[in-house]
Image (cartoon, rainbow, N blue to C red; front, side, top):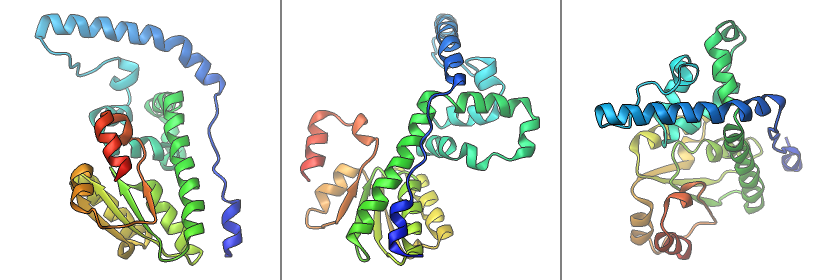
Length: 231
């Protein structure tokens, strides 16, 4: 393979379909139902948490149950990123799989997968331009699937780059390290279990060619975000 072929690796993005129009019609009623159900549950038990929000959502599909159980963590993103690649033809005989596919087709799920593909595309172009020996810092890395898959692709083209993954969750970083080893780039990856702000404070002198930070900015206050960008 030649480096010229890298430019042909364009991301294939998901668009709105007729299923999304159906979802847009039925979801408001479901949300209203779940809201009333939670309010009643809160009055009776003092807790907002429902074991099951809606039968045809998290009561019928174990896949959706799993995503809900790890909501807000990188594992949830992984499940959404990899649902269709991991879907087997024989799974389609189960009604629960069709239910999972219906919810995985939501516009917000498509948006997450499109962000993942666009991130890979931007990283591929950026790191290819930097060339072998480039270093990248990923903050709030999670399992770092987009970056690690990009690094593996670059290695196939003879471009070796190194990454430092920083995250506060050791479980996510262990999964990232396992993925890196599986992709054959384990020796190119260093993981650091630490809050990204503390990491930046303690490593003022370190320099990287590329810094990637996707999604975490939504969770930082203005003062913290300003510090992170300056650093």
